[in-house]
Structures are given as structure tokens and as C-alpha cells.
Image 1 (spheres, rainbow, N blue to C red):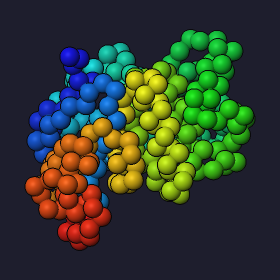
Image 2 (image 1 turned 45 degrees about the vertical axis):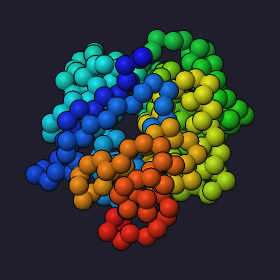
Image 3 (image 1 turned 90 degrees about the vertical axis):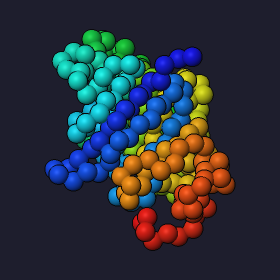
Image 4 (image 1 turned 90 degrees about the horizontal axis):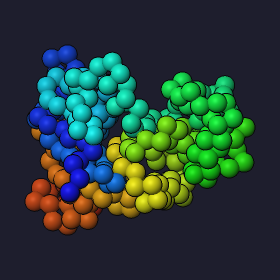
Length: 253
């Protein structure tokens, strides 16, 4: 059995003296679509920012491919960071650059590939996300859903085997969001890519996830872990079942 691609052990996150998450433990296995969910203010985005190395934990260990991201420095840390791609909630494309220029940017910065090779790779990445023919469009000239796809293409530029997506369906209509879900499943299946996704969109969670963890701000930690259909029906915690069954619980909002 393969070692997990992510191991989080005894993780605690603070902002100043305020504890946001404490004593978090979980693993992500290769090829999984793993979702981090929970109500507003539970620490989903905080956890994601630590997983991608933007913040250092107050205590604990985060291992990526068996290497400790927390203690890594220099070239070792750079290599770890380059082993995964990140798509931020807004897409974060550069508005003054075309789609092919956006996707080419990581290749220009981190590789020595000739310009023609970079262009070919960027075109291939855009093709993988269904944007062939839009290479020379600017972000303002395409829809929100297409911007999210372009952001995924850019995150894939360096051929990572793992992707972190922050609220990929945010701001999208249901049909566009469903199309993005299918793209994630296709990439997962075709490329055996691991996805770690922060979202509260139940339709997406039920469609794409292999496993979820649910955070709760009242306990500052994980209150449920498993497949959403199992949690929806069999969780011993009433408000976990309420979440998956869309029952209102004002205390978690």
C-alpha cells in the first residue's frame, strides 16, 4: 500500500493568541478527491493556506510526499511547493495577460524549456480543460466558468500530481459548476491526480468526493470524516446529518 501523499499530524493553527484549529490529524491518499468542508468560520481556508505553505502552523507536522513542509527550507521547500498546483477562489488570473500567457508563466519562471516548447505545453494544458481556441483571449473576455478552467490549466503547468482548489464552484451557476465537477473527475481519473478541495457546495461534494473531513468552529477541529453519503445517513452527530440534508442549524452558520 502506498504511503499517503499528505499527512497532517497534531496540527494547530493560531492567529495571534486565537486558536482557529487544534489537534488536527488526517491523511490524503494518492488519487483521492478529498474535500474539506464545514460552516462559515470553521477554518477551511486557514487549513488550506497551511497545506500549501502560505502559513506556518503553531504546532504540528504537515508532510507532502513524506517530506515535512513545515521544516523544509531552500531548494527542498521549493521542490515541495512545485509538486502541487493551486487554484484560488477568484481564479487569480493576470488580467493583462492572455490565457496562454497566464498558463505559460510558471513554465517561464521555473523551467528552462524553450519558448516554443512552453507554448506547446500551455496549449496542451488549455486543451485538457476544454479551452482550445481561447488561447489568445484575455480573462475579461471569457465567462467565470472558463476563468476557473484556465486557472486549473495554469495550476497544472508544471505537471503536479496534486491540486489544491479553493471554492472552485463559487459564483458559478449550477450548470457551469456541474461542468467543472466533471472536469475534476476527468482529470482525477485520466491522470490519477490527487485533489484537495475546499467547498461548501453540497451538489459538488456528493458528485466528486471520495472522502471528506468536516470542520466545526465550536470544537476547532474535525467532527466527521468519511464518504458524504455515509455521513448524511449514519453520522451519530445530528448537526452533521443536518448539514448534508440541508437542514438549517443557525449555530453552525
